[in-house]
Length: 457
Ligand code: GLU
Ligand code: MG
Image 1 (tube, protein in one colour):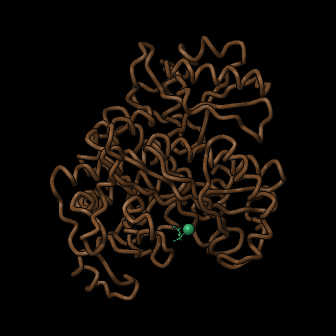
Image 2 (image 1 turned 120 degrees about the vertical axis):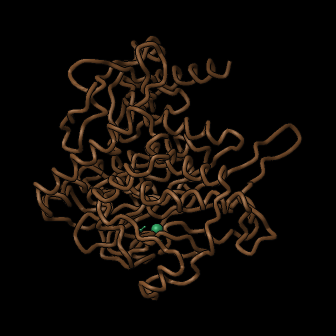
């Protein structure tokens, strides 16, 4: 019945808003949003049957080169099947709308290389809880499309600078309105560190919806910029020496609402000095245990490692801390008046080159491993790790993180738990695609590496 209502609402919107093309989109291993579109007249039948896609697309690198993974070549198809709940109109592309898809086999079964399915599998592993999440993406706004070696930043304002608000005002207001009109509620916005950097955050949501929301946010942010002759890039570091663009992931586990009892945030414990429950601590224990491998999925490009450096507030230290912006995992201070609801765990070692479904799914799997094994994360890191010597860092159990995509993929392949949750297809595909990117970027050299990521993300 509900599904029926959603489909009716889509049909109505297609008629009323004069939509001709409905994009069936998915996000590939490099976090590029791709898809095919159904026309208005074909929509009803394609909602069910989906649109065909060559399997090998999930084996393509950032340069769109198919990698030689067995079973991924000219032969074989899957289907893009849309989730009707994810339908939005694309205000920057009049006449077009979009839905986010699962990749399914010809028999209609979830496909083992589908990123959205990976997140659903992680949620199944956390089935006792409702998982809420939000992403916190930063992006750089440029006056026009960057050329190799040239980036014209829209403003030269300072961090949180009122002049930065002014410089981007028309665009920022239009973006908030466009997102809200599609049910994506923006909570905060500000110009951030360094010229041209901005951050807009959406309200938290159930995990799959949070990842979907982020995909739309990125598309709208870039689309509305292009419409105005501007360019928005979510590349971790668009130009050498710039402050990085992060995409911190926020998570909390809740007891579901029941008739008569509201949902309860199970990460919150008002009696604890950090406000965090034992469940939250075990979850962090799992994140820290698998952090070097997780980094391959949350900092997923060659460019990511220009950002993941000490002093960048990007969480380059393998530790957790209370409001510690250099620790990979931060427990943010709670908001007065909504202490319990606002308790969450923030993973700072995450950027927009990460596929949001893979990143969230991997974080949930790792956290739940900590919950199952009751892992103890040890003492939180309460000081700025940049003030500690290597010996002090070691004695506090702060782990070094991979310093390149290559090191991160090595760490992933050495982590049998993470490899097993990736499953038979992704555990082969993902490292193959990432190693191709490492090779290609090495061959192209530094300016091309920055330019490629600035254009692509
Ligand atoms: N720009 C920083 C990053 O790359 C984050 C700064 C902050 O908002 O704490 O993650
Ligand atoms: Mg920020």
